[in-house]
Image: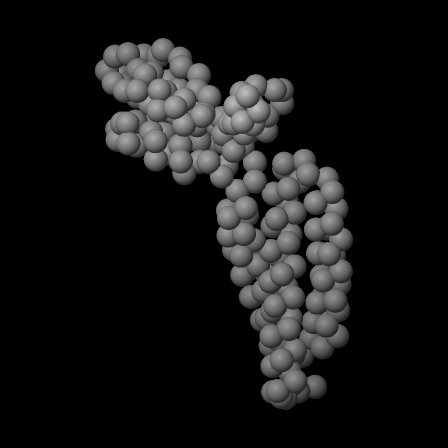
Length: 184
């Protein structure tokens, strides 16, 4: 059986690409929300994702001689992953813990962070060349760029790492502190 290129075949392949892209973008977001324990969002994304998947895979499997659909399916998969990651980055859901190590400006960095409403835990440490300040600052992911900017303004040579965290118990969080100040 031979495949003939028609406008319908090209439109169908474009449809497969778009649906598969959407399917994989939702899949990427769903996995990220699974990690963050957001059950309702995970359920909704999983439901929509599955409906799209069944429709798309059905149309591809219905005509395996149509290599446009197969290529579009693969391209939609790959592109959807990247688009999902880009969407997730813009949503900035979750929390991040920064570890900041400064040889000379630890107190200054901590002061600037506190002035901007962020909680900081200071820990004295010892590095290769002497005493250092180790600072821990847990923030919402959407505040990550602000933290990096504040630290860099105070100490360009500070060593900064970050990792995603899931808070377990209450503590000082910027949003909570700002709400508390507004009610006074």
